[in-house]
Image (cartoon, rainbow, N blue to C red; front, side, top):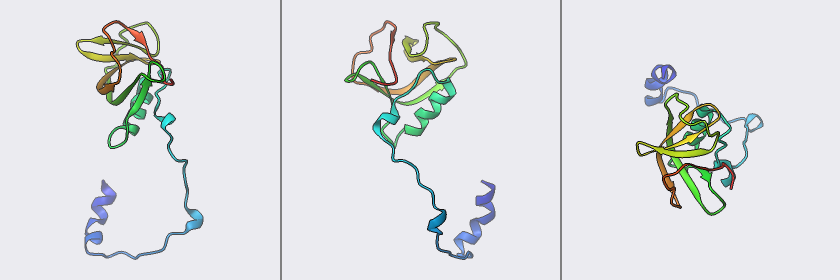
Amino acid sequence: SQLFKKNFNDLINRFYAERKQDDGQATYTIKFRNEFRYLDWHMSCADVINKIRAFAPPYAGALAAKNKNETITINKAHDRGLRISKQGPGFYFFMDNWLCVETKNNTLMVDDYIANFDLGKQGRFISGVP
């Protein structure tokens, strides 16, 4: 924010020197593959939320799986700082109409999701990998 404020007028008035990129110093990363979207419930709640944020729209969303054909796309979630169930990572249930999933250390509260199967009302386990 400070860098932007400091340089905003120069950018608008085109007071900067253009220079060619040094391709020798350029870095690359691997291309994202669909399997990267799957969540690992054995990670901390904060790490799961960060992964959900990384794949949130405009991207395709993070995934949890009941099996290969039954998946939940998760676009937004938060951590209430509570451990509601003692069933273990990947256990999901509903509480006050919230989809909740146990992670390594806390219960994840899912704000936005799409499931391509009936989640039911009883608790079940979902994995990060189909």
